[in-house]
Every structure is written in structure tokens, then in C-alpha cells.
Image (cartoon, rainbow, N blue to C red):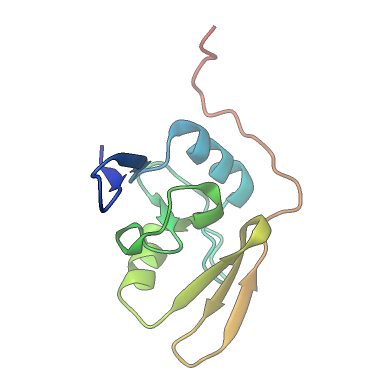
Length: 125
């Protein structure tokens, strides 16, 4: 597991810790909110090992690991986001505003109701 430590520049005191990967609760919420790949026009369903919880603002650029900065993308579109001129901004409520390499803007709005889907694991009690 990757952790990012934020320390005070003068004292070296630990200010906060940020995990690189979303925790189980964040992933479950994102699966319920997003339901499918959030790239414009793609409706590939979220699948373990075939979909990625992507940081809208890259983690290596300071983007936090929180649901306000995460969205599911299929592997193909996750790679495309990082290796092409496509850009994306996440607005409140998980709304994604994509801009194509030609400057065209597409908005992807998640479903209005978050539906939790049973993931097959039994409850912890």
C-alpha cells in the first residue's frame, strides 16, 4: 500500500497521511455511483481487475484519494486519459467534464440515485 506523508516544512512534524489507493468503502461507493466506465460514450460495466478507480487530479500531482477526486474508468480509457490529450475535471456530485484533444467538451453525469450492489462478500457480523 502506498502512503503519502505531509510534514511541516519547518518542524518536520507529520500533518496528515494520504493513501494512494481508495479503501473498500470508497470503492464500494464509487461502484454504486458510477456503475460503468465514466469516459464519454463508454458504458463498460465496472469489473474487478478490468476497471480502475482513477484519480481525476493525478495522485502524483497532489490529487487526494477521496470520492470527490475518483471515478471508475475501464482499463482502456484509463490508459487513454493518461497518454493522450484528453483532460477531465470533476465537478460536485461526481459530474465529469471531459475535453477532447480537439477541444470538444462532454459532460458525464452519474445516475441520480446511488444504488449499492451486493458484491458477494458476507457482512462482517
